[in-house]
Amino acid sequence: MMQDKIKIEKLSDQVFYSHTNHKCDQPILGAIVGSSAVLMVDAGGHEEYLRQFLNFLKERNAPENVLLVLTHWHWDHVFGLAGYGNQIIAHSLTFARLNLLKQMALNSTDEKCWEKLGSQEEAHSYLLDLARCHVAWRDYGHIPLPDVLFDDSLEIDLGGVRCRIERVGGDHSEDSCVVRALDSEVVFLGDALYRSWGAEKRYSRKRLPDLIKRLVAYNAGTYLLAHEPTPLNLDHLLHWQNVVQKIKALDAEGGNVNFETLRKSNIIENATEQFFLELMGPIYD
Ligand SMILES: [Zn+2]
Image (cartoon, rainbow, N blue to C red; front, side, top):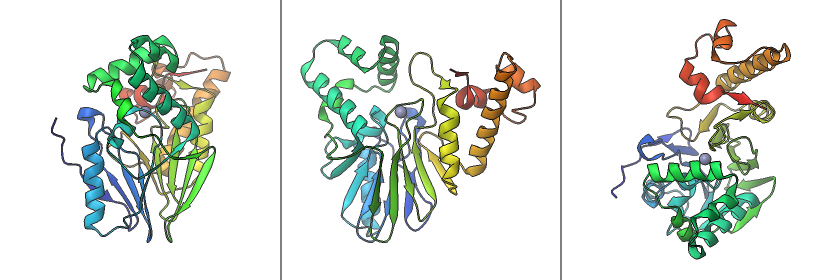
């Protein structure tokens, strides 16, 4: 299948990102460029996108030493690794999941093996997503496994340009990591701020406020959420933090929190229902 040409945007002299492509769930790819090395953020869902990005960097005479970090294990962030030969960095949980999937893809003839990933509903929902994007889960068998692993966080100096990779977890995937370009105040969020991808797509009341609080504390200028067409800023996060706090307050009063009650209480004045449904709710325990 012929892939579209990716559009790459410059955020600073050191940071670039590619636009999303909703047609095939293609997420943002990132590049942080130092004087001695480049850190790519995610591989995307198809090797062609990664190749295009690497060619773009080559044309700009970026260092040939390229490292790549995965934000989490989902197919649309890792399938681009097929045929990739450089170092791959990942959280140990991401490695464990990719390793399991690789073994399943290469050795198992039983589709039920997917239930090892979580609940039956979650596995079913994930497989439906793959089918919608015309992707075969057995392609996990072709993905090279990460070779540099970390547990909580990892700092890298790319030659005068500092990066910090942190596992933040969250509702979307327990291995979710963010990548901070410290000198440019840019944070690649991966999918960390999205809901869980199981049958019940949802946020937890416990995890979401903690995650937003942690991201706000970075006090960065730009936050890139992997499937959003435009970058976010600190004001967006502060707004969501405010909404979540008000939801918690309504909860404490014993109110039934849904879109209608939020609208009536002027919590989400300018937000559309779609915004609420997609980004803010429903929020469960
Ligand atoms: Zn994801």
